[in-house]
Amino acid sequence: MDGRQREDAMASQVLIGDIGGTNARFGLASPGSGLQTQSVREFPVAGFESLGAAARHYLEQLQATIVSAEFAVAGKVDGDEVRITNHPWLISASGTASLLGVERVGLLNDFAAQAMAITALAADDVAMIGPGRWQGMDRARDATFAVIGPGTGLGVGALLVREGRCFALETEGGHAGFAPTDEDDVRVLECLMRRFGRVSCERLVSGPGLSNLHEVACEIHGHEYRPLTPAQITAGAADGDAACNRAIHYFCAAFGAMAGDIVLTHGAWDGVFLAGGLVPRLLPALQAPVFRARFTSKGRFASAVARVPCMAVVHPQSGLLGAAAHALS
Image (cartoon, rainbow, N blue to C red):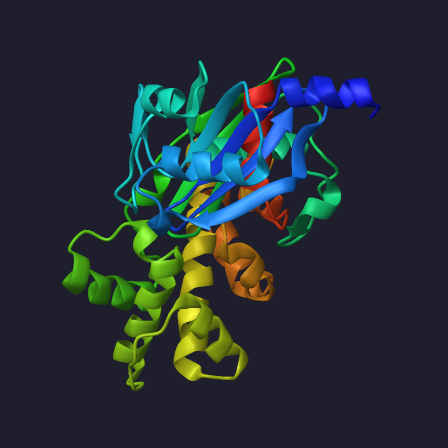
């Protein structure tokens, strides 16, 4: 890129954000070059009173000028506003635009952004869970993909490719009810019902869900219980802790079952992408047999689901990648 091109790119920069319940990630993007990976920064949302304050802090750090902003947010977008599901921020697009001094701020669900990221993922950005290979998306072929991912919560979205155009579907599928499929699942459900009443999939398949499952494993199997974070559970499993290993087994089983259900409910016969912060950390467990076994265990549709490729997203900033693809499309 020569000097003039660099000046043109800077004059048309868009602020991109991926806003979760724990962290806010920001980056800059521009037409022709997409997401500028060297611009990416991450901040804890608890350190700021609002999205606008966090975004302004980021822009001041980089001394960057922008023409607009696009934020992928972990919550349901309702017109001009969105409330983060697992954090008290209430975000107003118009209010944030005023604070940042730009005419437009766009808001989209974080898993709509993860769906849009599919358009930009290369083969090295994913790891296969089971058979198949990802060679990048072919826009010339109509297709339907699903994306599901555990982090602070559980996100679900889809991408429809029709006549060369891409349409991201925003859903709150992580709050669908958990469906047990064997006696072990029933025991897990009974434990969680005593604590929560209605049990959504997010109560199992998320960071807090993994902690819930560790507590359940201790209760069912008589292990001594002490509260552990997801990072402590994965470390404990690596050290051979029985309760931690059972928790991860329950997690992968529930995750696989739900991912297979998403194929059925969305008609996502062309592939399922696993995204979210926990996926890279749990990749070896997800590649073990239990996830794929539960994924394909769909009764009369088992053979059809068995042909669906399942891919773990290992790109470090897929949410920003998708938000940039949406903003610049």
